[in-house]
Amino acid sequence: MTETTHLKPDAQLDLRGTPCPLNFVRTKLRLEQMQPGSLLEVWLDAGEPIEQVPDSLTMAGYNIEQITDCSDFFSLQIRCPVTVQ
Image 1 (cartoon, helix red, strand yellow):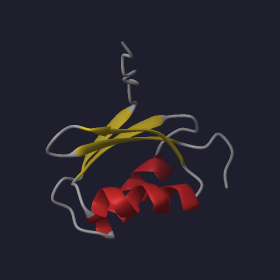
Image 2 (tube, rainbow, N blue to C red; image 1 turned 45 degrees about the vertical axis):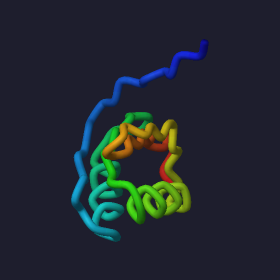
Image 3 (cartoon, rainbow, N blue to C red; image 1 turned 90 degrees about the horizontal axis):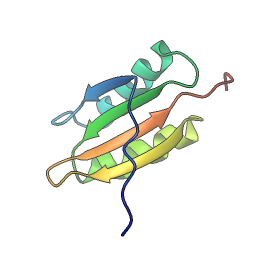
């Protein structure tokens, strides 16, 4: 039996109900305020938000550590890069 590891985030952002691309912009702004190596947990709706935000963050140089399906929303954990991109 495999147990899912839940990482402890340094900050959390609830963006359920926030449309694209505003949820990406808010996530990126929050990440820019965090210390290098910090972990941010973002809650996103199904559909366009979970389909678009992880890809956009990866293209912007952020590392997606984990995506968890929590039934009515998705939990996305993003690591701030240690070096500035």
